[in-house]
Length: 66
Image (cartoon, rainbow, N blue to C red; front, side, top):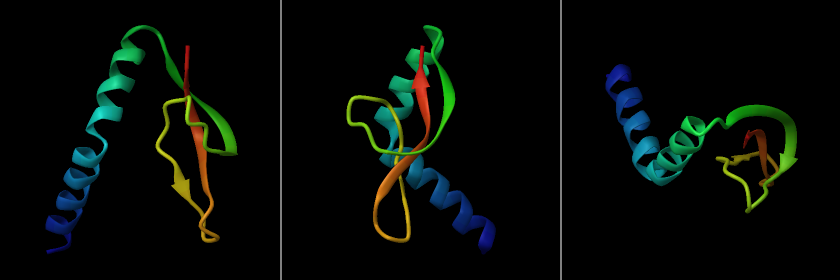
């Protein structure tokens, strides 16, 4: 039962973020890579999937850079 829940959760996450994964894959093929930037506020101009802290603030840890 737990395994089925985990699989469904992963599928839902991918489907919800498919456009992001497609664009990130294209950029990585062009030489971009993920760099750790530490906890920072989200940047609408960069590719990232934001996390949300307990206080409700969104932040990123990694950024896709060339």
